[in-house]
Image (cartoon, rainbow, N blue to C red; front, side, top):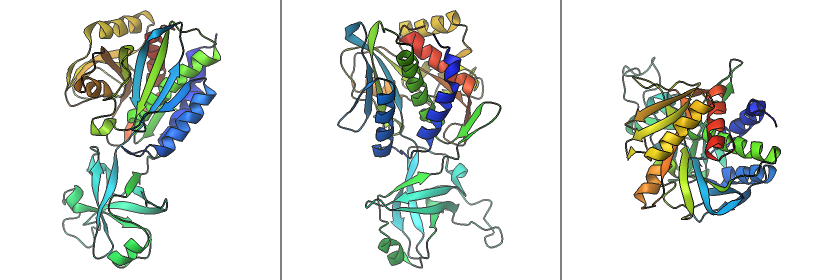
Length: 347
């Protein structure tokens, strides 16, 4: 049987491809096609919910109640709010990106006809040589805009391109894997977790492992706006959310760890399931951390708020500078894959 570490190249390839496929909340068409292709390669049954969330399933010996997994491919993003008289494009946010980190970033505007136009996200005081408040002006929706890379002079020129209110704006993820094993990119939250689940599934498929119980993985496209896993299958034994671990202040987690969250803004996670995960991390000698995240919510929280009577827990690779220019390490992702497999009864 192969080692989990032998899947690093697959993990890197998968997360890179996911990160470079735009999917801000509510826009899941392209990422769904990618997930369907991966499902075929790793022997998983694929389907889409009515909301466009992807479901990947593996059959186990016990099919009466399945183990649930969830992660999300939706990311932070922007949407065209209005077009200025001078042809500048005003935007609103999707989710909660740190707008200060977006000043100067490249982006792509998608029209409803499928045309793409490049641009740059800028402060409305973008030049130190012109504006005396270039360094101090607030970086927020009112004080930032998109400069489109087209020769436009007014609002009508922009509208004639097909750009209008409600168009999605994709932010360049700037994905880089370093020789030292770090993944640097926007939207590691939560595409790294999706890659970890796909890697766990591939490990099971390649090694022809017979699962004790069937497994249903729900990959949502509305987590960043709060209702990703509001609807889940009712025949689940439990639900394990795989999402990012937080780093900073008095938290224990690092980029090399798999985080196990005991409590977030929605309250404690299931005590018994959390204990089982901690015991598995100890047994497998994983680098792990147990933490509390007061400003955090997950798909399990959405599942709970929708009234589902299913125990839930949360794990994920440690991610630095979340909702900004994020970073994790391949070690943290491998530790996460191992804990996912332990949850599934494989390790």
